[in-house]
Length: 122
Image 1 (tube, one colour):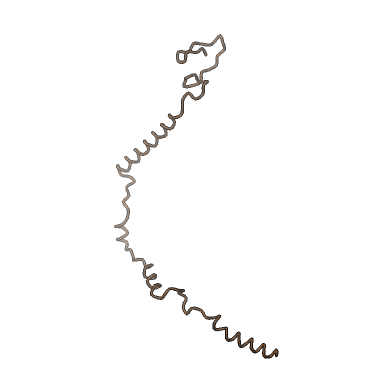
Image 2 (cartoon, helix red, strand yellow; image 1 turned 120 degrees about the horizontal axis):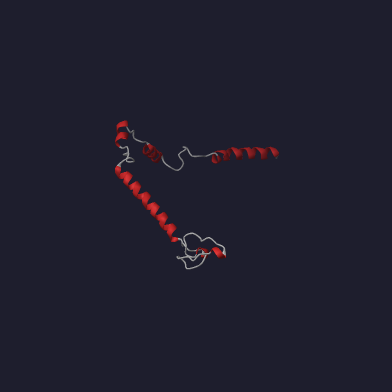
């Protein structure tokens, strides 16, 4: 009985081997050979000669008068934006300035003077 079982097992394994080992005949996957050849042709880059490279080279415009002009204009516009941003902040946000550009000094009572700008003694 054991002999028949092992013989039947071996026959079954040998019979199932071609079904389990069946694979595709090529390594191209699901694509046919025509598609792969077309892709390989599409990848090929044409040779660019030295003369062609010189013709297609970008012009060096960094040191022309027009470039300098636009560079200067952009710098001035950036500076103006910076000044406008600075001017947008309130000058008299701190009440201790009393409308002065710089905070007035605190003097002793007998040294205080009348201020023409804000009308206060300080």
